[in-house]
Image 1: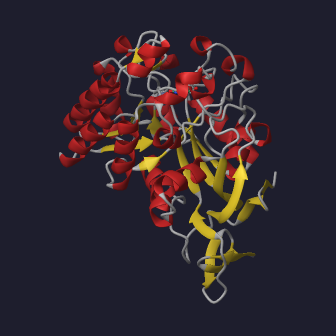
Image 2 (image 1 turned 180 degrees about the vertical axis):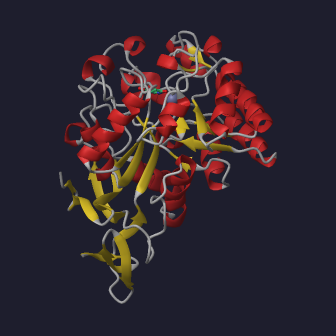
Length: 409
Ligand code: DOR
Ligand code: ZN
């Protein structure tokens, strides 16, 4: 029996991992949110344990209020077999801080040439339902079509990193005036939008589920709105950094702001926020992408793209979208749990539901210190920034994974 005091809903009583009573006479100041769910986390294990492990990433997730994360497949070896997805799944269970749900690769080795064993990964102990070559686009339309057809049979979903590779060769940042001024090769919006248009048409044709990763342009929002108006099964995510930061950040050539897709313009940021508000974009996903100092703190052109996200996501979303806790619960818990098919996550904080809960102190302010993060990497774009709202506790099926702002294991 666990008692969670001081929440805005009242005192929450948990037995056997389930909420059994909420006493509304004992209300407090902490916001009780359903445990957050991240559809897009890079954990780097196996292969780059120097940048992140399943355990360190799980700790970062729990500290950010997450109770489940979907682990991207671009590890080394790639998560393209039942063996690798089961390994990641098992490591997640051993860490015991969040439910780690592996995502399987769409193509063997992310090479875009041959479909991976999607069925074997779906049937494995990891029960994979989301498949993605993230980091790479499944650019061959024939392969994409076959992947959509394949996963339709078990209601799986293909999560596409929308980037027409022939339009982004050598790209370093958003294509436009700023790139021209800095002398960096541009990554045009149309490279994302062309793939989204193509794949939305194909998802409609096949009748299968398509999810668009890290939507970054105003045109993409329009295309997804159009696809949804057709009744096609298309969902989309936006990252906290694309909701807040713009391409201007590249001006100092600090590679911490290098990310794929790149930071875009003010117009894009505003369209992404509007798309999230009107439901065109379903959810917020971090694209937490840890990189070692050697891979990140070098010349812009050589730095890997990606930024940390798990420990700052909730505060950044509350800052950019306002403290709309019901909407935030939908964007950061209910919707991603639905898209990933994670039963037991994303449920409202109500009697009878699993006690996956994030407790936020909405009043406290804190300064982001890269060296104080639980992640093994330091590549946060928010270093030195003052954020408002911090997770004080997280519960996974009633067990505290974070207490007093500290991970319990
Ligand atoms: O910025 C990114 N980093 N975008 C991706 O698609 C991949 C990711 C990574 O794995 O570092
Ligand atoms: Zn990606």
